[in-house]
Image 1: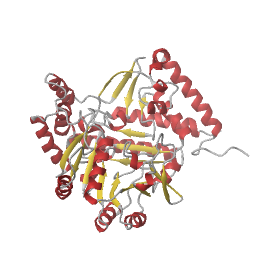
Image 2: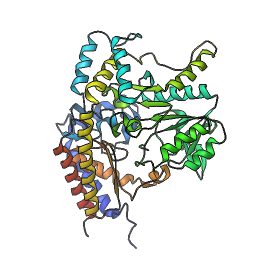
Image 3: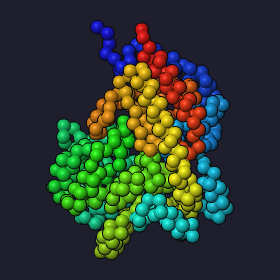
Image 4: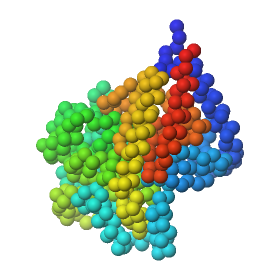
Length: 457
């Protein structure tokens, strides 16, 4: 009896394809291989950040430069970049207004723990782009989410946060819970965690309003923390009425609604929240909001801000547990102003969406032509091909849809044909700098790979 197919592909064909593509990649980057072998040992696990070991190629390339939507490594290989720093450079590498702002601010200092006139301009632009929130600045979305949860708990006096199974909110401890047989548990694989996170968090399935209501009815949930679209695994879209239901249930049971737009800022001008007229109490966005300069923002509605100010005024003196010394520095504000005012524009988003639609339709046609049991999902400028049937309904389905062996082989195959996509979930971003020719090359390469993997015996 033949081995079971993997995402519609014969295992022997997949193994031969993966080995061949890995060998091609290794031959093409001898300088990077030698440099990594000689000098990477100074880092733990031979990488400066542990998740870099998750890239599927035989060894990492070493980047020499990046501009617009292209990236060149030390071996002289230039790639069409659709990963774009996993959203950190969603508007392209070093957008000219941002690069200009960095040069100008560098002449006047990098951090002073005091605001500037540029900070005031950034505040106005944040409100113009995302809505009437009262803003605070952080360095990462992890920090912004952590601070938002602290505010929610201070306001409500409740301990728990409701998150969705398979969610992504950076490295906030409370969000590392999962559902197992309908019960919230500490996520398996969470390194060094000694606390029982189920005392401060409850997990529900995305798109399950009945499950959300059951959790909220217990009266101990301070906030619902959610992405508008699930993005950490294979992408899951909200069903019709889901976000309206979350808003209604949060108000019915006295919980705050926190919308984390760090990945869904691809949705359009103002993110998914503004495009779809969502009404969170707290809004969070990070990654690309300052054009690649490490920056995140979190904002409170006027009512939420008033409740926070009351809680803050009544607390004992001492540290609040929020804020970091290097956050809200003048370089962040310079880059925020440049990005919000000159890069994050209606015209750029329109172009991004147009090319992303071309990409998603092209990939879907290739999948249909090869009768692959896969599907494509798009949220604005963000596109994913998923090596399983769809659409997916929740985090559990998304986790089971992953096909690591197939995804790794495809990733390396695309690299060998001149395209870089995100390593974790087949994610592709279209930037203002992306060209139609780059999109068409990606579609053609994808077709070539599937032709090899799905050809008749």
